[in-house]
Length: 320
Image (cartoon, rainbow, N blue to C red):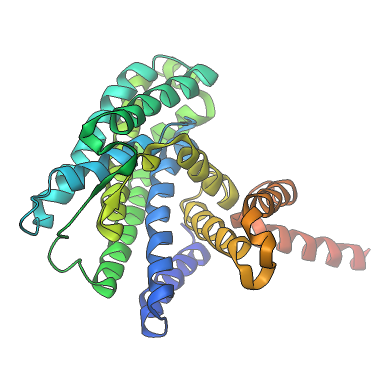
């Protein structure tokens, strides 16, 4: 990561750390939710942007982490985060390991459909059985100590986001990360050079699922409530849009995409801006995303590069 990119990341986290000093309760709640989305987007970026595996069932791992947080918590006492958080991550990672072991034997559109099928299986388990409370969901009545207030939970979520970002940055700069990049570019060539690509892809899939489980844990603790919609294909599609909107292949893109998607959603939902049309916010959001994808082929993360290219082009034209 060059200096400009590092400066951007440091500045972004510094602004997030200072935000609660000037924001009200609504702002803190909104940015906390967006940071959880960003953790979720980073987990998928490891698969799609770094490994080239398009997963359309990623919400299953988030939902499993969220349901594990509620189901494993005692109803009469505050659970300890020291064991609950690792348990949620482990539950999501274990399901990801099982799903990946089978789905990674397929490729292309078949891989996409198999991951979607496994996600729908998990969805209907919590939707149609008493385990997950059915369509009504289940409640986390007592949150972990120190996380039952908005500001401490905000900073804890920020710490998790920073930790996931640093972890993935180090991972992608390692030999393992370079192997994933080689698989994304040309898996057949990687095999020809002696790499067994399947274990690398399975490890990436499992790590990605575990990190999504962390986001699920944060969702459960934030809202104190989980329902089957956390495992729906709609959420899998939304997080895929986030990383495409931000720019595939960049960890910064996952952060930018999560914030852009959530803020666009809030903007088009605003009755103060759109009045009665706000109830049709899906239309406005869809048109905005289509415009971004059409005008910014490299995502929002590529905007500075496009601006520099245009400035250089104008200077070159003047020189001629």
